[in-house]
Structures are given as structure tokens and as C-alpha cells.
Length: 291
Image (cartoon, rainbow, N blue to C red; front, top):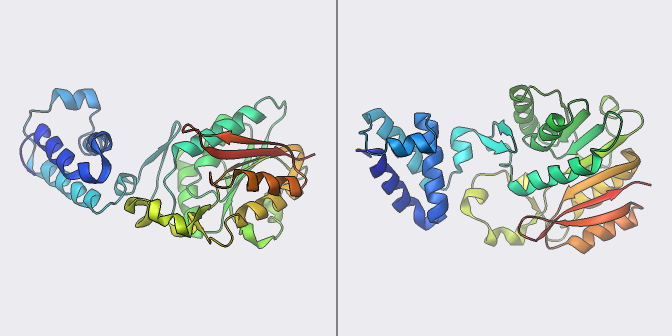
């Protein structure tokens, strides 16, 4: 891949267009160019016709080869953005999604008026994105986060250090029904329990792109078709035990099951249940309070 940035951009666009579409293909080129050359879009545009050094051209070619194998650019550069946070990601954790940023904003807006330091728990934390974003939003809060995967927790702890946060991460299986570890169960309960658990049915794989199916951890994505709400049953049962009075539960949900999720919360005795639409108008969030 020789020549100028302009020729590299044309090569990327032509090669990636069938996989990603025009807009995303150009976005990927700009992301790669910024990582390799350390230049923003304006600076790149000004230098489109400058010749590239051989080693720089070789790096562009190597990254393009990985993109053509459907490898997410976030895993190639071990970098993902979540709100104002820059996070380390690899194949041990999901790449944070914009819909989950909406979930954090929803939760933050509903607990922001409390007049005392918050106690927050993020279940199925993965990269730690939710917990870290809430920790940054509420610096005085006591924030805990758990996952069943020790490898995911290693990534989350790495992000904790990168973000200069003090989230307490711990190993825990949400489906076990077991009590939380004593050190991670503050007296008085939590004011906010939040989760983006696995919720994609196995039968929905046919609707998903290879960059997700081939690289992101399946255990963080999929549930059996026979038990699509297994995590929501477990989380609601746990929440009623560990939430403080008037404490808030917020979850990201599968758009196919909004009413079923609402019914679960009703059966567990939670109140003030609300369904929330995402930026595409789909029911992607649900919230409820403990009596």
C-alpha cells in the first residue's frame, strides 16, 4: 500500500465498502489514520497528498488486512470510547455501545437529586464502562462492580487504573442466587443497581455481523432461546434483597421483551416501573424502584 494518504483512503474505501458501507468505511480510515499518524481529521485532510514512508504504508496495509477479516478496530488498537472515557478493550470484554451510554445517562439523571453519597452496584460489568462512567459522574459515590469472568475483571481493573477511578471490582455469578461477598455488600444497601447483562438469543445470531460474532465474547452476549430472561429474573431477585428503600434498578434489555421484563419486576414487588426507548425508538431500558 504505497503512495499518499489520499491513495490509502481510496484503497480503504474500496475494500471496506462491501463490509461496512460508505460512511463507516471512511470513519474506519480516519480512526486508523489517527492511530498510526497521530493526526486529527483536519490535519489529515491537509496532508492527503504527502507521500507516506514505507513503514507507515505497511502499517496501514496490516490494519486493513485485519479489518477485512472483520476484526473490530477497537480490538486492533485496544481502545474504545464510552462517553468521556477512553477504555482498554480486548476480546475478553464487549465493546461498549452508544445504547449503554444512554442507560448510564438515564440512571444518573434519576439518582442525581439524592442528597447523600451514593452506593452503586454494576452487575455483569465487562470492561467496567458503566461503573467507571458512574464513578466519574458521582466522584463521592461508593461504586462496586462484578462479573463472572476473571479475565473481564482484569480488563475492568486495568480501566479503573487508566481512568483514575476507585471502583471495587469483584468476582460474582449473578445466576448463582448467592449472597454478595460481605466486603461488597455495604450496610444499608445500594441506592442504584444497574446492569447490561447478556440478552441476545441464540436464534438472533443470523441478524448479527461477523465482527461481533467472530470476536466478541459469546458468554457476554448470548442466552438460550428457552431462557431469554434468565438474567433478568436473577437480577430482580437480587435487587429486592440488596437495594436500599427507594433504591433504583436500571437494566438494558432486549427490545423483543419489554413487557415480559416489566412483568418480572412487578412479580418481584418492585414499583414505579418504566420502559425507556433508545435513540432509535426501541425499548432498550427499564427502571424500577424498591418500596
